[in-house]
Image (spheres, rainbow, N blue to C red):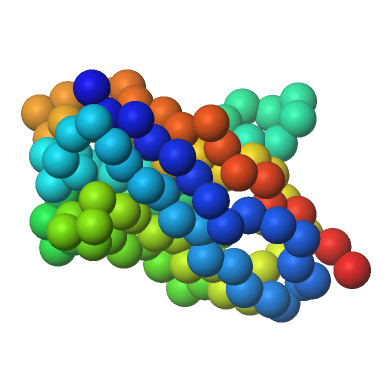
Length: 119
């Protein structure tokens, strides 16, 4: 069973950048599609984007297209979320998640890392 741990969150000004990392242990990340989600208090967790096991395909939620990039390094068992031109509305707790390629639901989750976009 894979365990996930996010890092790299913090406080950044609008227009700034952050790179989040997701470190996997207990399994080979290459077996999994990786996703990133975010949540703010009082709202449902929302999908940010995902990357296939090989890294050959990515998908993004409309509001982050052109600003966020998901990548992965299976040799290091890591996935990344590069966030550029951050906006206040990007504030939230960011989670990485994993699902086997044959599954439709992300069933492995990290504990999240806080991203705050503010002056």
